[in-house]
Amino acid sequence: MSLSCSPGSDAIRAQASCCDDHDPHSLPVPVALARIQTAVQPVAASEQVALRAALGRVLAADVVSPIDVPAHVNSAMDGYAVRAADLPDEGTVTLAVVGTAFAGAAWDGRLASGQAVRIMTGAVLPEGADCVVMQEQTEREQGGDQEGGQDRVRIGRGHRAGQNIRLAGEDLKTGETVLAAGRRVQPADLGVLASLGVAEVRVRRRLRVAFFSTGDELRSIGEPLAAGCVYDSNRYSLYGMLSRLGVELIDMGVVRDDREALQAAFREAAACADAVITSGGVSVGEADFVKDTLLSLGRIDFWKLAMKPGRPLAFGRLGEAVFFGLPGNPVSVVVTFYQFVQPALRRMMGMNAVQPVTLQVPTLARLKKRPGRTEFQRGVLEQRDDGSMAVRPTGDQGSGILSSVSRADCFIVLAADSSGVEAGDTVTVQPFEGLF
Ligand code: AMP
Ligand code: MG
Image (cartoon, rainbow, N blue to C red):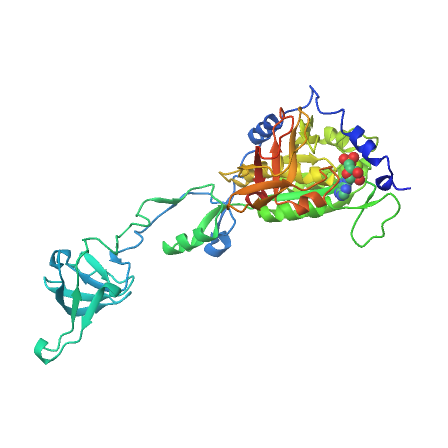
């Protein structure tokens, strides 16, 4: 009889989760996070890369504008460049059209009183002009014999000096810091840098991150699943999360619960990576050799965290590399990665913004919780009829229910001292889009 189908399984589940929420020896989440953040440093090395290759990379130095953008005063509209003083307060005025200014092909004259120049968006504003009137607000009159063959334009009231004009340097000024060191380059940043004529930028060296799973019960995809075994899913979650961060990945596969094999893997990882991440084997089970092995090789702390899911976490150094020993439970891996590993890796990458974005929204359902541990429940953000956002939990929140993460699009963060919230109460959420 399978346990999950047995009539007593709810009772077992309730019992298993009822007695463990207050532990005076466990470390509060904010304390663990602060310790980790102060223990890691940005990689010092940097490299010069071509503009396109900078997407997703972290700037190692401020980018200072070498030019004004735009470089010259120009028109924001297709229309007529005029002198505002020529325009009427009442009725209309008729001006002589003396030329045309195109983007990239300026009109070289000087505009005199009574004259207008036909002007296109982006064209340099002719000297003497101080106002652009939209084409739609004018009436063109073809020049006849009586007008000496010259076209004229009729313009009414309601215009002022400076309208529809883009000033030189109004976007970016020469000498201004355009993008600060520590910024992860976004798509629009590439456009901004291109607008400055910047062909290359200096970025931090890409972080190298080695990771592997530990456990005798783990099977890799493609292998048959023997009784009592599970497929190694943590390495795939980690692959996805690390790929999104833009680090260089060193996937070291599955390592058995065996001292020698673990020692060899830790040594190899530490020799080639800035950070080493493992899952499993950090709790107090009989086959949890990771602890002894790490203590013999590096400076590692083993923490019991006041959080759910994800209680055990190992953190420290293996040689020069920073080490994170995540718990084995698949949900705990994702939660501890986003709460501790990602902020630390972001800092090591040289990023300024390392913490997840949070929102305050009402919950659509009651959330049960005991005081004692910070909980990261999984939720789905929903748009309500009035357009505002709210969050709904994704059902079973067990630490082995990985599908609860895959169905979710945010974490619902419940503070350690919370004893649950009622439907309609405001909760803090971390949207995955701001994290992943
Ligand atoms: P451990 O922390 O090693 O005691 O593992 C805790 C639970 O997570 C056990 O049920 C393991 O089978 C499971 N687990 C550990 N590593 C993995 C993995 N890489 N993929 C899927 N499940 C795992
Ligand atoms: Mg294990």
